[in-house]
Length: 465
Picture 1: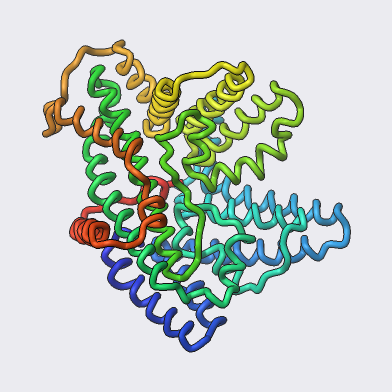
Picture 2: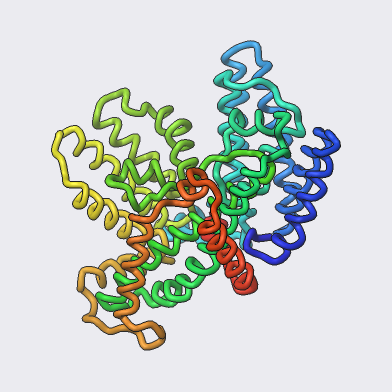
């Protein structure tokens, strides 16, 4: 079930919220928590009910493992149980997400044909696995007390974040579930929730999905693109994923606010960044935070000299790339960003300064180049497209299958750049401004346009991870 679907907007959400508000109105706190937990599990099972059992086993296992770690009387026992939990969680993720990838590469290296039947990736497995890894690690670090089982179930399965993030932290989320204000949002928060959801729906259906109509055929023909259409492909995907991920992040925030729960903003105008370090403070913020606290710092962070810091950055981003998908294109994307971060930190050490404009240009186009690997289906497609971008393959020839003229495309890309760089983001619009008619009318219009386009909408890009 998608946020951008008829069944979610007109059936699942109204029914879920009506029952929920009724329970909270009559002070049935435990019942309301169990209800949203049940609704979230139903939301998950809607894709493939067979994976619900796997998801439930993961929740039960990590909940009781966390309690066992907390109750352990010695650091050694805590460490033993933590290692057990990490192995179990990462093995689950590795089997579903990386088995075929490793077998394919092993076969290519050795010539031994090893294959398995197609393994279907459970929706959201990366997100709920990382969420629970953070939980058991914090148990070992003695950073949490025991929670009620119902609260933990809801924390992990909470449908606004379940399939595409953000990665929630237990110590920020569960206290809100346990609060007396859970399920009792103010009129202001309901208004904010509707605004977030409406703007996100508009971005997804009207902008991101329409950009996909141009991006998909261009990348499908990556080996045959000219200089101009190669740059168009790279730039259009740069904005497709921008609006697509921004849309999901904002809709998730809005849905959580309907229950008076604040989840982290996962997206904060990343194309305004003046450095790669700044970019990763703005893009997929919860993943950046997770990688920093649960991978980069445990690897040693910046504690063992500059060279070790650069190596740790590279390893962290390499694994971050692999987290996104079992493909060498994702590994290279992560490696590029690891290299970018190392260069960025080295540049800061030199004390040299760049103008804000030049810093933005370098950062933006470094991100664009990396997105080519992120989107391309194969390494050869990515390298071929990059060759076209430097004029190696063909001269200009705009594909006749696309109904928009090159001039119109240049204008559209310019408008997207202005939107991403100069326009206030949704958080600034919704949170910092009181509702007024000049804001309410565009919000209603966005909601209406989004609903009218529901039938032809695509999955969010981050659903595949």
